[in-house]
Amino acid sequence: MAVRRAGKSDIDPLTDMFSRMYILNSEFDPLLQVPEDIRERVRESLEKAFNDERNLIYIYEEGDRPYAAIKVRLDDREFYVPQRIARIEEFYVHPSRRRAGIGKYLLNYVEDDLKKMGVSLIIARFPSKNLIAVSFYTKNGFREIHNEFAKSLK
Amino acid sequence: MDPIELSRIYEGKIQVFPKVPIREYSDFALIYTPGVAKVAEEIHRNRGMSFTLTSRWNTIAIITNGSRVLGLGKIGPEAAMPVMEGKALLFKYLGGVDAVPLPIRAESVEDFKVIAKAIEPAFGGINLEDIESPLCFEVLEELRNSLDIPVWHDDQLGTASATLAGLINAYKIAGKDIRSSKIVLFGAGAANIAAANMLEIYGFDKSRMVIIDSRGPLYPDREDVDRLMFTNRWKYNLAVTTNKEDCRSIEEAFNGADAVIAASTPGPNTIKGEWIERMADRPIVFALANPTPEIMPDEAIRHGAYIVATGRSDFPNQVNNSMVFPGVFRGVLDSRARFISYTMAIAASKALAGYAERRGLSREYIIPRMDEWDVFYEVAAAVADRAREEGYARNPLTYDEYLELARKRILKTKRDISMVNFNGS
Image (cartoon, rainbow over all chains, first blue to last red):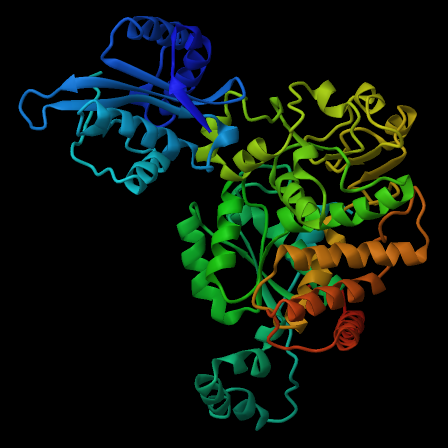
C-alpha cells in the first residue's frame, strides 16, 4: 500500500474523486445539492489549495492509479483548546477498493503526519445521514462533538 | 374464457377444506372444545408439536405488499390478491402445499418483520412474492435471519434456481467450462441479482460476469455506484465485484460472452441480434422476460445462438420458477427445515438438471417441462436431503424416504383435487 502527499499533477484524479464525494453527499439531503459545475469548482478549489500550505492532500495508489484521497485543512479555533486542529474536508475511497481497510490506512497515515506537526485534534464533517461515514469515524475513535442544523428559508 | 369471468364464476380460486370428517354429533366435541383443549395443552408443553398435531407442517404464507406485481408495478395488496390466490393454487396443485395468500399493508422492512414474526406460529414457511427491489432484498435477508421457519422470495431464488438448472445443462451440451466462462446478466432486478450470487456459489467466476442495467454495464467507476452503496447495497456489491474486464458498453459486454441471462424488459427487441453475434462460439441465450422474451428464439438462433431458453411454455426450454417453488417447499416442509440456504436452492437446480439429463439432453431440452410431474418429487427430496445435511431439518430422514414422502403427498393432493366438484358456487 502506498500513500504519498499529492501534488499539482494529481489534480485530475483528485477532481474526479472529490467531485464524486460531493455528488454522493447530495444524496443525503436536498440542502446538500451540488451545482451543475461541481467538477470545475472542485478543480478550482484544488488549484488554490495547492498554493496554501494549510491544506494537506494525500493520495493512496496502486501502481500509478490513485484509488483514494483525503484533504485536510489546518485551522485555528478561537475559543477552544487545543487551538490548532486539522479538519477533514474531502475524503474518498474508490468503490472497487472499499471494505479493504484502505480508508483506515489512509486516515492513520494522515494522523501520524499531523502528530509530527504537533496537531493534536482532528475533526471530520460529513452529512449526518451518511451512516457508513458515522460508522467509519466511530470505529476509528472519533466522536460527535457538534451538531449542524439547517433550515431552508425559502 | 375471460379471466375476470372465471374469477366471477368461482368467486376466487381457493378455499379452506376440512381434512377431518364429521360423522356424528359427538365429533364436534372432539374436533373443537372440549376435546381440542388436550391438543392445545400438548402443544403448550412442547411447541414443536404444532408441526405434528396441527396443519402447520404443510401450511405456508404467501406474503406480498403488492409493490411490484407481475409487470403491473405498485398496485397494492388488494389488487395483488388474485395473483397470490393463483400462486396458492399452483402450490397446492404442483407441490401439495397449503398456501395462504396474505397481501399485507407494509411499507418498510420493519413492517414486514413485525408482521412475519407475528404470524410465524401458524406457518411452516413463508414465500415472499412480488415485492419491489431493493426492498425485497432487505426483507428476505431480515426475515431469513429472524424467523425460525424457512423464508423464500420466489422472484429472486425461484427464478435464479431455474436459471442455474438450465445453465448447468446448456453448458454441458455446448461443451463449455463453467469456471472460465463469461456471462452477461442483462437486467439488474431481483432475479438477476440473486442469479449472480447463486451462480457464484455454484462455481461461476463472479469477476467474469457483467451486469447490465438500464444505464448499461455496471462497473466500479460508474458515476452512480457511490449512491448504490446506500440505496441498493446488493447491486452495489455486484458493481464492485463483477466486470473485471471493465466493459463500459453493451457491445463490449457481449464480446466473447458464453451466455447471456436476460431478466429485464419484455421484448421482442430488448436484446439485439447483433449483440448475440459478438458472443463466443455456441452462445447460450436465456431471454426470460414475460410475456415477450427480450429476443425471440428464432431471431436469436438466426444470429447464431446455440441454445435458447425463455420463460414461456410455448417455446422449448422454459426456465420458470414454477419448476422450482413447488418442490422446494415440499422439501422444506417434509424435512421441517428451519431455513432455506442458497445451497439448498442449488440442490433444487441440480435435481432439475439431473432429471433432464436422464431423460436425454438436447438443444431444445435442457430443463424438465412443467408436465413432468415426477420431477417435483426429486426436487423436494434433494432440497430436504440437503436441509438435513446442513443441519436445518427438524425431521431428518433419508433421501429415499423424502422422495417417497413427497410423491405420496403430491399424489394424494392430485387425488383429492380430482374429487372436487368444480361447478363454481
